[in-house]
Image 1: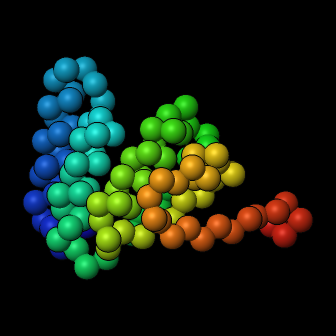
Image 2: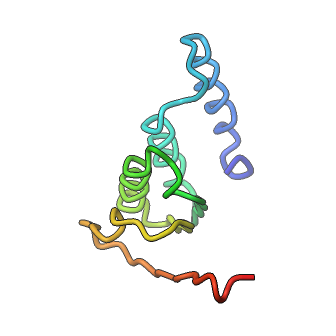
Length: 108
């Protein structure tokens, strides 16, 4: 994104610096989501890759965020690697989902 939207690196730095003053290491998920929506609309295509959603204690929050992003950004393509997650079965938005099941017998 920084190649096409040079100002995004300054915004990310400002968010991290502002949060550091309040003894928090990083921006909130909501702040990151807002930034992606604001800047993502300016791009022809935006690809986001997320791995191991199922391993996060904030799995439902992350899944909800990804669904909101997908509904707000028509140019967004998500690649999510996770074990089967019931949150994806409950999609309330018309999001096209391609599911590929990885079985231990076919993975090296």
